[in-house]
Amino acid sequence: RQWYIDTPNGPCLIAVAVDEAGTIAGQEVFTPARLSFGGKELKVLRISAPILDKQMRSTPRKHPVQCLSEVGFHAARELDYSLFYAFPNFSLGPFLRRYTPGLQLETLTCATVDLSLWRQAGDAARWTVTPATRFEAEYTDLWLEWKRNTPQIFTIVRSPEWLTYRHGAKLVLEVRTTAGSLLGYSVVDVQSGLLMDCLARTPAELTDVLRACLSWLADNVAQIFEIKAMWTPFMRPSLSRLGFVPNGYQFLFGRTVLDPTLSLECFDLDNWHFMPGD
Image 1 (spheres, one colour):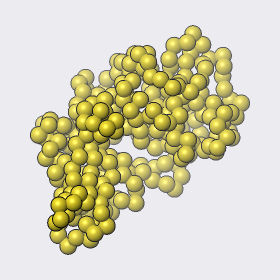
Image 2 (image 1 turned 180 degrees about the vertical axis):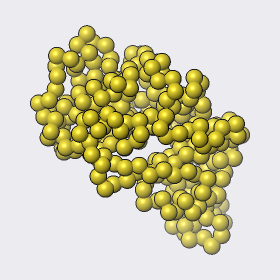
Image 3 (image 1 turned 90 degrees about the vertical axis):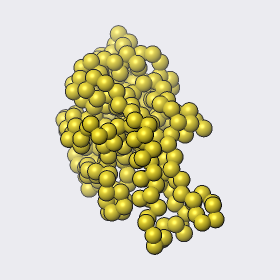
């Protein structure tokens, strides 16, 4: 219920596939979110990977994944959603391009940094880093300050409720000034070492927040040897300054515009701060 009904932005849309016996044999989940876009907030949906019974995967008729996507598309438009977005596994690229041609896929590089380079590199005179267990009202203030400082940047709305929903089981590191004010935070998946989210008061301070978190991770989390990050146009300058370099792995990011008054060009990736945790 927590994941599919009681989300911060209302219940998920769930398209289901039913076989000839009337048994549910597949599903695709569309999770609601809000996108800060040009001074307003759009209703958007994140697409999860479809689940299909093995027997349905080889049907000679129209592929069930295509049907599930079309059902989700029509339902979303009726409910005034403006956009689908997705972070599919890179290996699914050929399949998705064949069966969900409406999903515009972009290939993004993965970049990594060796955490051993960041040992004993903290700057206690400038900030403190601690794991966060709750997202209080000051996270709302942080989000509003980010919005004020990035009016032309699209960002999934990061309310305290959304952060709890998306990152409650991840390692969240909050960075504070020596005066105690919240400078920003980073979210890391300890199992994979992937940077899931990062936000600060200003784009320029993203580098400081990530720098502080890298040092803390190097000194406090022995099981992570490197941090991986999605090499997006927006994050690339900060990642480059901190020694991240592209490796051979690649990500996919997909989007489909649902609102007939908008176009794909409206959602230029150069103006979008998106991360895997979105």
